Length: 372
Image 1 (cartoon, rainbow, N blue to C red):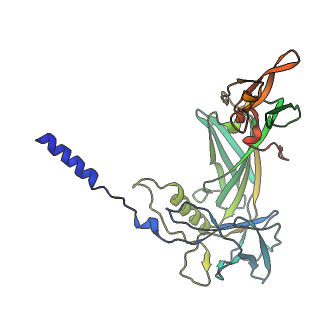
Image 2: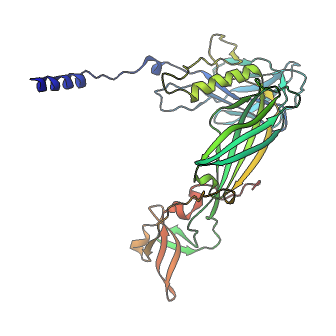
Image 3: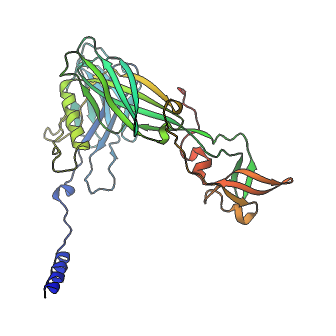
């Protein structure tokens, strides 16, 4: 009897399960998100405009197109930013007066107007160094900086990555399609470069210190034996000075986007920055606009500087007979030739492998960066 009761309990528990969609998943969100800063130094000002999406949406990146974006000064100066696609608005170079305040003004395609608060120009100190240490399970990179005037206190960083990759099996032959393979020593498919950029919010503060010094603030951890330092790796660090309110904003955003996951984590907070909808003051706008110059520093790490890194791709060589029925296995189907087995003046077999082992352009670009 007890056995049957157990089965009934199981059936009831299975039969009573229903799909539950939390109300938050269906909230109709379409808030404007503004990312970037007013660059008061050398180089472009880049502002990205997007819209928030519901958690159940399949598309999370919704660029805001056809907006009118300007940088306005308290001296009534106006500098336009031009749309370059995918929600990005840019000006190649702004000419600003460091003694006055500036704001960002936006007019969207639906006629709504948005503006940030006027903010004072901050001076970003130079980056002292980008340092790194090899640990048991990878390499940790750090930012080091200081402000001798003790005026900065709050910092933000982001970075761009570049790393060199090599094809384990460089090709002397090239498959050009339709069952045809040619000898080509000039193709550049051995050495390529891949690119990445920071995805997390990286901030730091010296507010609790006696002097404005940032020492070994963590930037990025590269796991042991990663492809990134298989040959040579470079990181371009960009540093921005923040005011106290901007630091608080990014700190909340960091907690909301990176620290959630259990009931013991900080709960989400509403992100209200210094950007407002002039048409509807109650509308939530996500973003914080600062005005400052950008400090940059580039770091290189070569594989020979590391101990026991030894990144390797697993590549198997496969012999493909030189006849029409066999060559049909070449890319874009499965394989690529890289060398040949000769029998007298004729090719009997092509030594082949999977495409990513032969042609690095399938994983990166073979155009060498100017800074390499």
